[in-house]
Image (cartoon, rainbow over all chains, first blue to last red; front, side, top):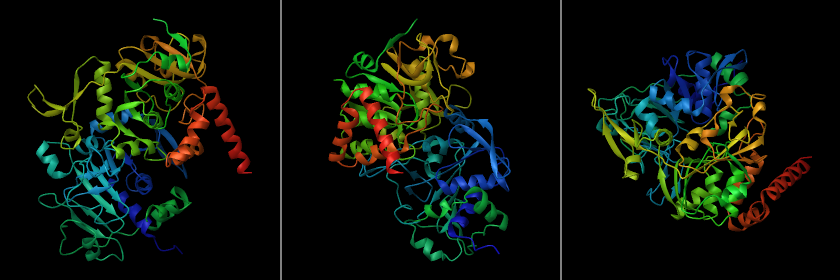
Length: 244
Length: 292
């Protein structure tokens, strides 16, 4: 008898869905749940994905372990970015309704209240290849009307800049899955996780969210997905710790 | 050109205050830390650092050696935020040029190629252009007429890198998984290109541990070599050693308050390189004893 899926497991599978249909592209995750998601997608419905070992190796599944199938040092990661053969799932300290993302700092950049990661690769990623986001704590502090510093580029900024290869896919949070499937690419509620009400998501979002008349429930992990997660990919259950 | 063999303190004495210094490695990986520690002991000041930053930037900032940092990030990898860099930013005590990581690569490549800039898409639409008002865009002269960011060359006065092996003539070898951008740092520097290494070996032994393509650095790219065993500590220098996570955690927690930082400094930094390595060895023994 399989135990019920946990919220972390539902989130891993929702994140994995970001890469469905991508084929042979580099799946780059930031954070544990996106990393498990990329490896789960590679082992199930999206076997073409390329996944790194966190250093310069590309790993292919082999039984319950993996083998190195390629080499991708940072200089080639940047070439992969520019070539467009990559889909990254990044984190976000702040995210607005068009998908502008901030990971750099909180407050004025000249002397921030809180120095965060810096822009890292977000500006280049978002104008070169598909990007999705993972937000472990859905709140009005993250989903804001206006981000303090645009690191990752949203749809409105991309259109104004003529960024021809820009494209955001989905945002997965601990409450819901969101996308940008509206006429003006404003953020839309795609599904709510089991037990979460649409109003909970709306209340935890600091801007007007597009909410369709019917909002489905995020799909549950299959028995195969749960078995892979629990016995092969994350036997120590680290996934539950990323959700505060 | 044939390189000189120097000590870390001789390297520091070869640099000048006010210089723009590029530092190889990435985050907390294969950083020329013995050379950085020598700068900490020197009277150098007012430096501009160009780095995929890690504890190299943090230590030099904490020692008030730095006027300006040019970077894609400053991180300890397993600890996402470099504590000294964060404090300096929040105190407003350093200047910063914050670039996208790929823009930083492009700036080094432009300098290495003696070009004033290279075009790229990274930066378009983002606030990188707002926080770096000196950045310009450039339009393709071809039929597409697309607009790009013109990433300016990151020209360096000096470069510091750390390799696994080198010979005394200035050829260098990496044996780990990633070359990072150490060749570009050397090529982007006008001179004073210093390469430390774990071990200096005879030239005819350079292929004993790795294939020809591991010889990232040739002697046209370096001016001096330093033998600095454990010279990247506490950053990783695979396969010779991994990052010293326990030591790095101690470094990061010591940075949290002035008193514990003064203790850290007294024990590890106000000593010469041999004294540092002895204190690190003692730290390792204490840790092993505590876990028994």
